[in-house]
Length: 225
Image (cartoon, rainbow, N blue to C red; front, side, top):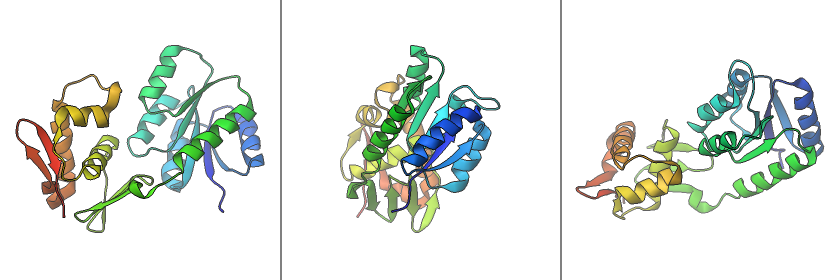
């Protein structure tokens, strides 16, 4: 079995070496980045990174910015490292979709244990993570959507929205239900944001956008043979 690849991002070379040595010892492949900009180049250039260990405080682009950029396209697991133990930082991390949050200094053995636990949890890919309906193929693990054999680039929320529609094919969904399921507890706006995202999603889907039916006064329904 191929070794899983982990991207370690930290501006301190000693910290990168410490983390890398423990990960390699546990049979992981490691790629390193010394700043946020390099991290994004590596992540989008290599396509097979299984997990990211990301420092918060870095030059050029900090960990929060890197996390936002990656989360717009991918659900790859992210562990944030920080020298701070500020609760607000931790809350921000979880709002951005961080999987784990570890304060420095930390035990490398504990870090490796967290890495293994997250990868066990996220790599158990079941059949329902590949959805296929109406000429649309959606791969939740790879975060890829194909429509009639052509890949379509969706934002993170557009992808989640389409997945939710496909999982609930033929079911009338209220705006409130969609909001609660796709945006979850971290969104404090109103249900009109659904309409905006559906409009953008339909336009990117081309003719297949017609599969998302509007139910006036209620919400939407995805209909496909």
